Image (tube, rainbow, N blue to C red):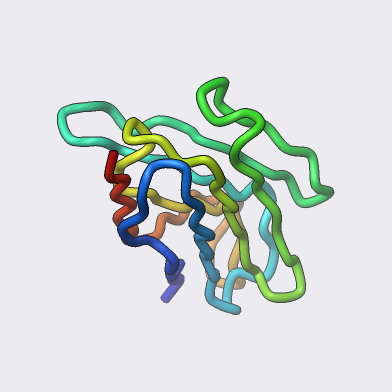
Amino acid sequence: QVQLVESGGGLVQAGGSLRLSCAASRNIFSIATMSWYRQAPGKQRELVASITSVGTTNYADAVKGRFTISRDNAKNTVYLQMNNLKPEDAAVYYCKAVGRTSTTVGWSDYWGQGTQVTVSS
């Protein structure tokens, strides 16, 4: 069974920092793009940042210059360093991996369970 396990969420004051991690299970033997999404109450899930297998990154305008996405391919892990957090960054953060396993055909999307980020003003 494919699993993505997120960690690192929590409560932080505005202006503070958090680092999220997401580890994909080893049975995903090939991962293309890894991404972070977030969903605030009453809002749609939105893309925060993504990174390809060769390190090409993409960021939502709202987080450019404050968030940094990175990955460790050897560990099947993606990170999101969040600096200068704002109250509007508060949401449940989800990671997504586009990957292949030995038992599936083609590429599939895999999602983590989400981790809560709360920013106090």
